[in-house]
Image (tube, rainbow, N blue to C red):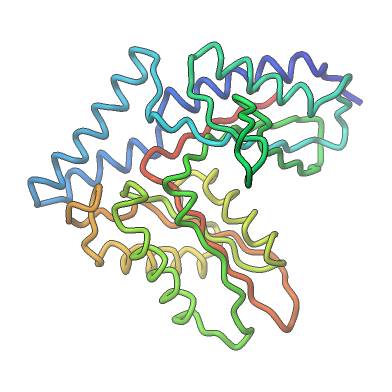
Amino acid sequence: MRIITAEKVRKRVADLAIKANLELRPDVLRLIKGSLKLENKKIARNALRFIIRNARIAKSKKIAICQDTGLPIVFVDLGNEIFVKGDMISAIQAGIRDGYKKAHLRQSVVLDPLRRKVRTGYNPAVVNIRIIKGNKLILSVLAKGFGCENKSAVKMFNPTASIEDISSWILEVVKAAGPDACPPFVLGIGIGGTLDEAAKLAKYALLEPINRKNKDKFLSNLENKILKKVNNTGIGPFGLGGKTTALAVKILTCPTHIAGLPVAINISCHALRSTKTKL
């Protein structure tokens, strides 16, 4: 049994919260630069150049990539041979608060979603915990902005729905999002489970490296087909037109009931701000 202190978790979460907000993921930046070579519209190319420049300035000057520093989401993969000494959840919340305060990031959380009178500042963050095999503790922080989160959706399909039915619905969601969710997008798709599990899978999909193919060939082909359809909409960077409406589509699936087919889409703007570490 390996022991990790809650204080160590707190410090790592604080570091991750800062890095996620200040440094655009390398895989995302790589695909944006690649898209720049494919665009032939001047306005689309300029938009992509602005994104690249913004990421460079944010990293060098240590300022937020986007003014919306998101609702922090912390993903914990906890090894079954790990013992966390202390209150891990409290440590995670404290780490988010520490990191956001240290980097002077915007306070965006309200305690009551309906009355909205009490702002809690930087947290509570959303925490997702999975138990995995081994003696590793993997922490991931996703700073999820709500310009794109607000455009995400879930639908309970009939089990008889075709792949084309699902793809068409995803396309409708993307078109409805349009420029409001700051394209180019990364689309996380969760399929299976229950309504809530599909939505969670869609969020986990955003943590996947977007420049790597899905190991499942069927899903990889489906991701490519959906990506092609999305980019054929011509929405383009910031909705200005062009070939780059989305950078990637990532799909995760899990078993579901014979009578159902939940599908969730979680849209991320081009500022897909996440990072992870192993303890």
